[in-house]
Length: 189
Ligand code: 5GP
Image (cartoon, rainbow, N blue to C red; front, top):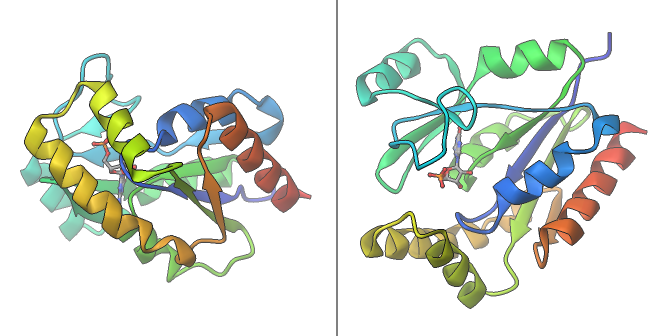
């Protein structure tokens, strides 16, 4: 069986990666699976362990780092986030095209190791920084302090967009999702 693609999707916190991803994953013809990451962040209301993330302790996360279980990992606004090698490999070996939704430091770690043939990297940008802040605030899940941290981080992340194969603006999740689906379809041809 042909190994599935590794599809890296990045973009600043609040840009709508999750909504766009759900839209893309609705298309069964793309044969997609989502890489569930580990994080030390506390679950938000409605998040389920093993679905959005594996919610683990800092000690456990550091143990996983030592055991080299991560394809990449990063410290983002006070918490660790990491992609599990085994999780991604198992799905790709089953032929699934795996979406890895991560911030830029982690993406940089993977992009530097890519050979390009069965990998794809996409960066999602907001229509403007004002719109991004509105979206983060609209989520009503972060404190003022965290909103500020995430906005500062977003400005840094936006500078790294040239590392990616494709940069797509998220004006609406439908438009953005449609463009990403087309990119994946072209790669699968
Ligand atoms: P959030 O706390 O909003 O769920 O995620 C914060 C940021 O971490 C988002 O940009 C999200 O895409 C990113 N992220 C989620 N999982 C991972 C991961 O496994 N590795 C890295 N490097 N970033 C991740």
